[in-house]
Length: 321
Image (tube, rainbow, N blue to C red; front, side, top):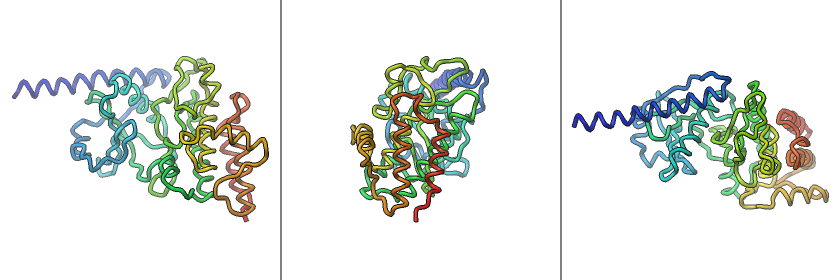
């Protein structure tokens, strides 16, 4: 019995040492040679928080399994890898999220609380966001959110991405902006998540060192062609989300959503979903014009996210009476 217990402990210790070294290496690479403190939870703490990963506590299951847990007196989300995924690749994704999110403190970004390094693949602990993803609401609700809410969601996520691009001297590029990466809290405030592909572009680097990653149909065509990564790649992906909110459709189900939108804009017949009154129609037209700018094929012709956020505020302030 003593030998078996010791072997189990050594396994946890080896995972901790290996994952901790990988975590520090990633931190140093993305934080100008500095490691940023991340709260480390034990495997035992997370077992207790999730009642030994009780299946009844599963909150979502897409690419990873998220459990609703109770930790240190607060409700949390414990993200675990799905079985069958390659350990090295999944470890890289999970640690990448930890390294990126620990640098971010914004009300419209899901907050990382800490991680566990004692498991084969590190586990992540986030604030708990109860009301599902934008993609789920679009695909499950025939009736779209009111236009004012869709405009608010667009503005909240624009603020979050602007923060990523501007908070540090080196911009954080998300690379996975899509409706699946937008969650809603208890008040239906939008929160950006899914930082598995995110990178910090070091000073003096061109951005082509990271390879091309992202989700089909949301990815910047210029980025796919050239491998050159910069903030404008996120602007394109965000432009696709603007269309999903405008039409209340998911691009994965409507593969020609962007092309059809551009064609309609060129013919002057673009119509938003469930828009009432001339004021809202005027807002939606200005919104569609902004979306078109975000979806330009050349990144240099797209606005910055700060410019997008400012324009959305102007649109929101338009008289809707």
